[in-house]
Image (tube, rainbow, N blue to C red; front, side, top):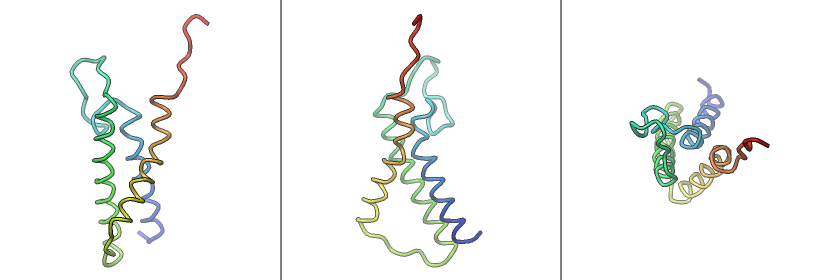
Length: 107
């Protein structure tokens, strides 16, 4: 894999991970949230899931970076900026879940 392909893979993983909590009601997209079919994940659970997926995408990005040479050390500024970018990348999923208009019945 080339460095450019590795970069785009990290970006794609980050975008998918940022939107995953909002596009379905499963935990990490795999496990059902509750045994009752009508149970919907609350927002606080989605926020925790978003935080954990951010950490997972950082680990995967670091592993891909390590394949091309020594990983460069990062300070708090890197994590602050990438956390903000991760939240911005989650915006399409947030809009899909909470701001999309539902079709009105009988209109």
